[in-house]
Length: 130
Image (cartoon, rainbow, N blue to C red):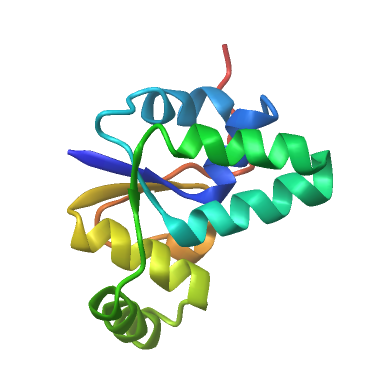
């Protein structure tokens, strides 16, 4: 099954955060990884604000190694339906719609997705103990 790692997972992985090891298997399987363009926007914005433009461009370049999914009208309308149904923000709805449309597992630590179908959720407070 394809996977879509939410922006928070990319950030955890890039900063070697507490949940890095949880997200790593999904982010290193590039053949199964899909990335919506709205995630590229979120990741670029975060990285440029926190680390500068060069780091932001490098982060987006990493996403380009996976299958990038552009926003289409049909995907936007599907996201609108999901936003209404699940009370999701614009970005969350676009990310969830992309995962659903491409039959991908959404992997996240964002509790807005908690309980939704085909979502693997890693609680931010639950760090693996080794």
